[in-house]
Length: 294
Image (cartoon, rainbow, N blue to C red; front, side, top):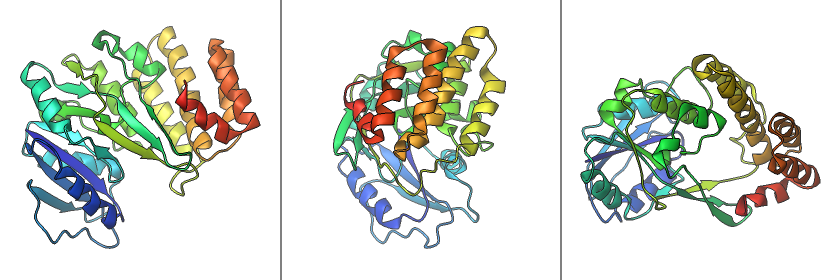
């Protein structure tokens, strides 16, 4: 029923641990496709698992988006699930999704909350996606991605291929652009599961998180040209673009993030943005901890 697609680059140890975790799924109704994005040391798995496993190696480094697209093209099952090597599915995820999808054959997109662990700060929080699928409009998603990243969604392979998969034109925010593309399609038929089914981990001051916003700025420009058509959409997206610019700075505990939140406040006069800006100036680490409450 499901094809679980895992892009990987130079993280062989994490891949084996992830595969071991998938053996705990209460329903073994899936295959796993690992796309090795031309790692220095190729992904090699010397044991068998309870599920079919396919390892694809890219001859050249393609990036996470294209690696997921390659996995999707090679998937043999109807539904695509996506997982990063440092995240985990809850043990009952495939069983819960299968039961939900059996009740509605017209659905081509499914999403759910995730539990997010801030590793360095030692706390977790639960994401808050839109529960009412009527709220999944382009206007709303331009204001903020209240759906989630790729590990928090499932997509029918036929729908994924129809809308062109993940954009390879972007070097940042590819998952967000995919959500915008999905909600814009006339065949979009979503279903929400009100249950945490993925656990994600986040690290502040990680070497892979850069405060250089050039790729983010390019992605924002691309999405603005493609999706913003009305004054409301322009206002919503302007606020959200500032949030997206602030994010890598706050994850690096940089006070530069405060400037973006002040600009967000000036656009929408949302008191929450002003409070966050002030807290960032006092202590970026304290601002991270606000995720516990807002």
